[in-house]
Length: 70
Image (cartoon, one colour):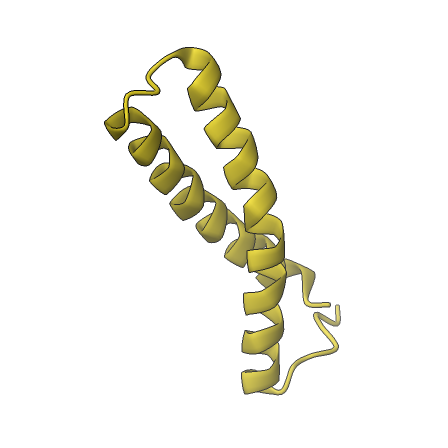
């Protein structure tokens, strides 16, 4: 697993997914702090498999599946 790539992809995916969930919660009327916190937690959890998926795809495209070698 390419951990540096996973951290970059996860941070981008988490930002996008949390932002989408927060906007959709606010637009649909769930504007209490508890609803926003739930949207953040769900977004961070959903971003984990998304990050893993895209890290593996990028690794297979670049031919660097085994990861970062220091």
